[in-house]
Length: 274
Image (cartoon, helix red, strand yellow):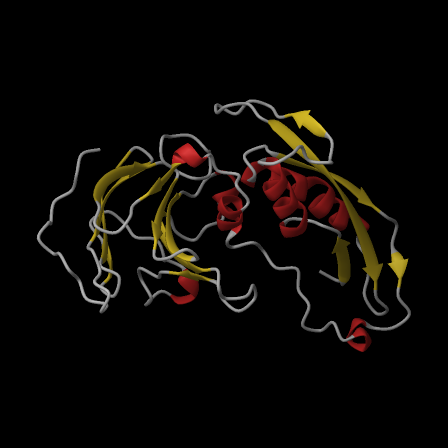
């Protein structure tokens, strides 16, 4: 594509979204609330955020304003509406092109890229866009059998499983299917991520557990039926028992860890009830 543009999105996701998430439990957001359409779950009032997109056209590159309009004026609002479970709406204003007199290399932006959001569902979790009742937490010493529904459509009893290690470190387990806004995923199954909130953004606070590292670029990262993830250091075992329809059955076993870092109890091997 013969173009190079920098779209400045003010308060797009983590700025606007975190503000919404933190304020939601204490007071009403200063943004305009609107009634979100029903999608099969409890209807909630959506918050509207106003976004300004400023396209910059650099010398030596053809400009394509229609692409900018389609990407940020149409696709982005649909994307945010979907990952927020219809809790956040974007009102996007796109200005005319602003022509820059020099090539982009002279502005020292060569390393700048508007990346995709590979962890958009993790952002959804951290911003409070998943109902607490649909997050199952399995603590140390517990054994549980769970049915995990696809995260993409927001339906089902359990959408996310959380395995806390301490106050700021935990595993998240999701059922990722190639449908909806996740249709582009290279593979589907049970995705396990390790999150360390003590690590700054941009330095790898989220690490995907790659079930099949022999496949490049996390192309087959999710776990399939019959596969098992183990973290022996923390006494965690996650067994993918099988798939019924679009739901996965999991057996999660967590041993107690002694203060010396060893496993205290390995006597149980079964799974509890559903």
